[in-house]
Amino acid sequence: MAAPIQEAIDGGLASEADEPIAALHRFYRALNTRDLAAMEAAWEAGEDPSMDNPLGGITRGWPYIRQGYETPFAARGSFHFEFYDYTLHVIGEVFLAVGREHGHIEAGEVRLPLAIRTTRFFRRHGDAWRQFHHHGSIERPEMLKAYLEAGVA
Image 1 (cartoon, helix red, strand yellow):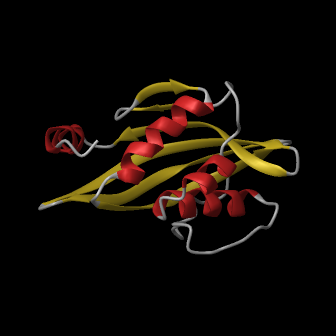
Image 2: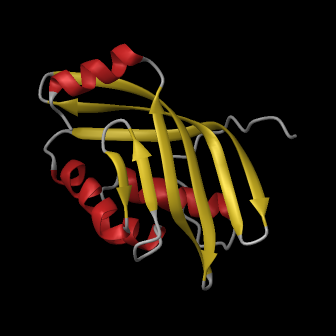
């Protein structure tokens, strides 16, 4: 297995290339710029996609995943996330990205750093890679507790 890639992805590199790394850049650009239309383009449509994380639980189907993005995208505070320390595993028309995210969320006087273990699955849908599953786990329980107590979700 290749060594994990340390160069962070935050969506800053714009690429329409048809490769897994470009799909990850498009996802993080949509996330960090709060672009709901770009986020929708990054995910598969319909009922197949799923997301599982401690902040939103298990969500199935793009319409419900979309609702999970609408709240933070509309929030007044700021946030920024990067994906790093990852490996890519391409298996035909599917790829898996396994790594870590770090970032922060700010709401008023509160600034919360977050560290998340992250797995993202994409599959080719038509002529593009689309995300069809995300699983995230906050690395430290006290970090999750602080986030939930701050009420920035």
